[in-house]
Length: 152
Image (cartoon, rainbow, N blue to C red; front, side, top):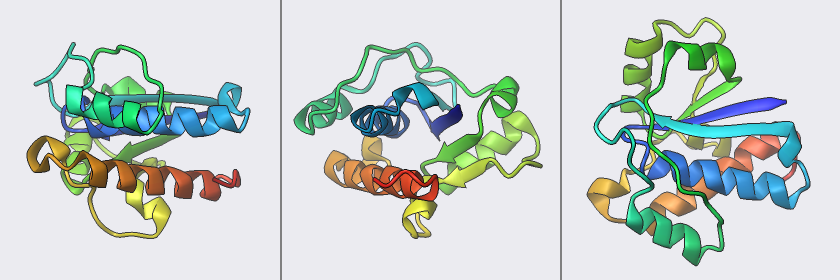
């Protein structure tokens, strides 16, 4: 089983969008039972909150099913539990390292690195551009599946 944890600042916009986009992609390929996909935050600001309503609207508009969920913060145990800790921006990496310490197994990645890009996914909480965030997330998830040998 491949275990993937998407991470952003609050766990109400980008990381849950990535979680459900990738879940949709693997489900459509009949591979859902081969994956464990989740998301979390580096901060405690939104703990317990559901996906931000504009992010929900964007997922619905794209035909991506999602469940009600509660934002949670990354724990040290997550490092042992997951194969990939995938961040939306560089700021997330700094915060992850504050929580877990080091990354000796090189599990921490930027989502867009899987799409061959060296940049952050802009936070739509601030930019209000959920279309651009979704497009970047979709590109990154496709690239991740390709890297795993599961053509997107």
